[in-house]
Every structure is written in structure tokens, then in C-alpha cells.
Length: 171
Image (cartoon, rainbow, N blue to C red; front, top):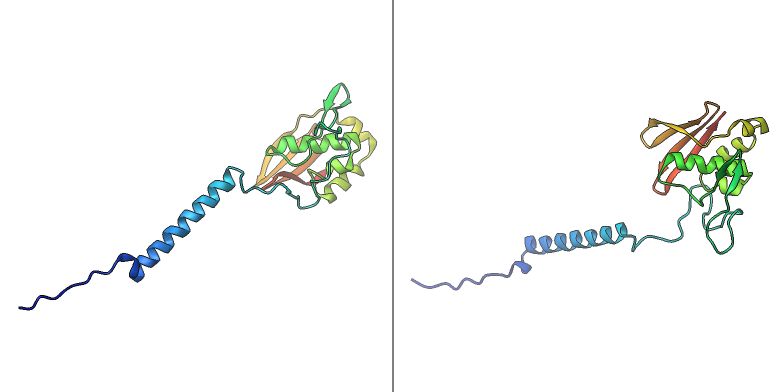
């Protein structure tokens, strides 16, 4: 009987071994990228909206504070934030506040231009009639909400990766 020498190949030299190693590396890299993105390390600082450039400061912004000044109307204080929010009611309030202040630039930071144009064409009587900031919001479909105030003004909002945006205005 002759003894045959069996040479065992390293798993790195087999096709299944190479494919397994490649799949492992791709999975590890993908996991790392997802983790870095979720922690904000890979997040871009120059986010833009579908309708406007948010890198421009609001015309109502105080120099050096990064916060717009409050606006009083009907005994209530109204303040505009620069951009969409993760809450549809808050986004609706942002548009309402910008409209009450007559600040079209601030309105364009939370609403599409067509919605802003329609709202700013509304009569001054409507602006006077809206005295509350209390919106009632209803589910209008996947990623959509209808928000109404005092039964006389309504906003259709759509969720995006940047927050909630006002798509349409009804009065």
C-alpha cells in the first residue's frame, strides 16, 4: 500500500472561501456605514429642501442668536423655526406663524411655493380670523396628514426625510 500525501488547501484558496470572505467584508462595511450615518458622523451639513435652500437665514433671524424673534398677535407669541420639523402640527404652526408675520421666506422653509403663494393670497379677514395656533391633524394616507385650524384653514402635509412639509393649503 502506498501512502498518498493529501495536501489540504487553505479555505482562502477555495472559491466558496473567497466568496464567504467577500460577503463578510461587504456586510461589515455596510454595517459600519449604517452605524456612522445613524450617529450623524456621515450626515451632510448642507441639507436642502425640495423647494428652497435652507442655508439662507430667515429674514426674521436675530444676528448671532440663530433664533428668530418672537412675534405677538392676539396676545399669543409666534416664533418661526428655520426648516421642517419632525412633528406635522409644529410644521403647520411654523407656516401659520410665517404667514401671520408676512414672512414669505420663512414660509418657504416649511412649505412648497404653490402652498405659500395660495396662503399669502388669502384675504386679510382670514388672517384676522385665525387667532389660535391649535391644529387638529388627521391621517390622510401613508406619510400624509391633514391639519386644520378653527375649521377655516387647512394644510396638507407630507413626510420627507427632512421632516414634514406643507404641500397644499385650503381655506
